[in-house]
Every structure is written in C-alpha cells, then in structure tokens.
Length: 287
Image 1 (spheres, rainbow, N blue to C red):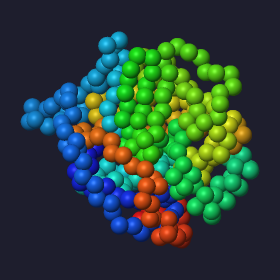
Image 2 (image 1 turned 90 degrees about the vertical axis):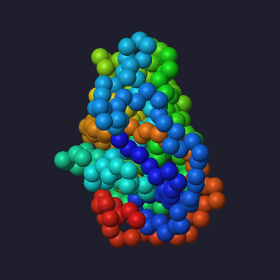
Image 3 (image 1 turned 45 degrees about the horizontal axis):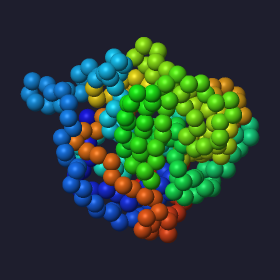
C-alpha cells in the first residue's frame, strides 16, 4: 500500500539533476483520509492488497483507483512523502541491463540535454507526456468507463484518455504531448497503442528523446488489488535503432485524493536552482 502524510505537500517538483532549495508548502485538505470504499481486508482488519483485482460489469479488470510510484531503493510506505521519486523518473531505462540503442544524433542530443538540464520541459512547467505520466512523482487517478480509460493527474490538472470502443488510430493524428491512444483487451491485459507525439519530448530527466515517429505500446494489468503493472515498449526509429521495453509497477494509494498543484502558481523555486556535479543517474542527484 502506498500512502502519504495527511498534511505535508512539498513545493519542489523539478528535474532530477537540479538541487532545489525551497521551503515546503504546507497544505491541508479535508478530504484526505476519507476511507476508500470497497477495500478488501485481511482477518486482522488490514487492507488486503494481495486480494484479487476488482472487475468491471463486463468482467474485465478494473484499473480504477489512485496510483503512486515505487520510490528509489525500496518502497518505504507511510514514512515517505511526496518528495520521493522513482528511478524511472530520472532515467526511464534504468532497469535495463544494456544502454538504450540510440541513433548517433539522439545520443549526442541526450549528452547535450544532460549538460543543459534546465531545458527539460518539466522544469518550465510544461505538460508531461504519456510515457512520463507513469514515472511521474505526482499521483494519478484512473477511471474505467464504457469506451475509454481516463487518467487524471495531480500536476497542472492534466488528463489522458485511452479509447477502448474499437476505433482505429487516426492515419495522421495531430501531434500532442500525450499522443492518440486506443486500447484492446488481450485476456486480462489492456494493450494500448499510441501514436501522434510531438517531436521534442523528453521521456525522463535524463533527456531521453521521443520524436514524432515514435510509437508506444503499453500492456497494463492489475495482478492483485494493490498493484498495477505497466510494460512500456518504445518504437521510435528516428531516435533509436531498435524498440526497447521497460516494466513499471504502480502501488495503489488508499484513503487519499488528488490535490490541485499548479507548477507556476506562486512559484519561487527557480531562483534557487543550480546545476550540481552528481551524475544524473544516481539517487543522490536529487535533493
């Protein structure tokens, strides 16, 4: 189970290669702590996160719920605050045993981006793209409704929709941050195909690129009540010489809800930012 402190929210939310010295912004929200309905319990009264996943009226797994992320190192439960991040937030390919198969220009771009870390759209409060939503250090709430899956994000109140009504991907979708997504079921796994990305996206704080030629395939499953598993395959021949796949786990968040967070509202963090020397791929790159 993933939970958060009832009152504490941190003001900083920027790229992992920057030291951010900021005073925590304390917020209290009356709805935090409201019991999540329909939670199965063990005989001793604790939430049974290993119970079978719920299902929708048509018998498919129900991904509805509020989801977090696995922190760097091991999940730390209730003592963690929102200042924790996942390793994939820093480098989406951190779990791979071999380097990403860059095209030469893409490798040079990543090296340049690591030097110019302040160019990350995240630092400038721009939207986070669909792959990055899964690695985000903000909570997300999923709703399964007939014909589509909707995801609401805390940061800047973004949203994403995945159409499950049988429609085909458009031949020439308008380029957007999230692309255009359609999904179909393969047993208990929702297979999502996304096309139509912008040409200048960052997949993570390391600057790994995603271009307008990029295609993303997600395989989403809920093996038990408390876990969402997402397998992401990026196929972008402009930036990479071969497709590559990563797997991400998302823990369920109980007794909580989304809180408005607008990146530029009363922003006082950027004046405290400075580049530091710790390599971006290490946990100590974040303060």
